[in-house]
Image 1 (cartoon, helix red, strand yellow):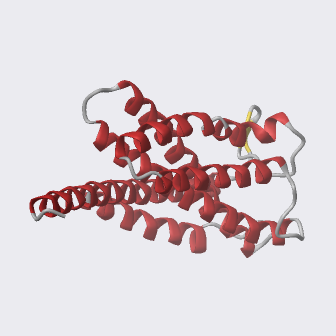
Image 2 (cartoon, one colour):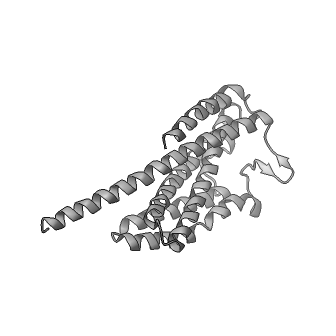
Image 3 (cartoon, rainbow, N blue to C red):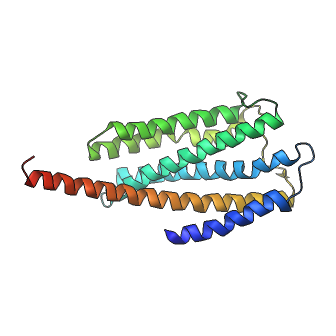
Length: 225
């Protein structure tokens, strides 16, 4: 919806100001640490979008009404979740090069996130491979429920296994300064509203696409094709 765009835009302006100007450089990593803010916002939003995909997939399987509309949102949440996961991996690799001296390490958080990317890329490929709408709806919903298991694994990976990936919120408190926390929060909400806008837009596009396809098939049938 358009109002989501108007909310997201000032949040992005404020978040960029906070991260690039207001928050001081980090002591050990300096100015390069600023990529952390957008990285964290993208990561949290990716997990939320994929969680939304799980919820919508569940509704698709157990609700009789508005299943087609829900299926549009299932595809949209998967697409946006995959987009945010891609941005998370890309920004994380840039940050890792500065922090760890390498673009990639087989750290538990990085590895489980990479697996997540492939799982949801497979979700979208599965949808594209099926022409029959009802079958596509059910199969992709079941697949979405199964692959969601990696979402909590990504979140808990740094707590379950030895990891060098930084953790912001721990049992002992918050591992960043109050100024950094403000920038993190603004970036998160800016990214979240952007994701909501994209999800809504994609769901509407899918609904319009299917409507056009139905009209096309109807007209072809009337013409005897």
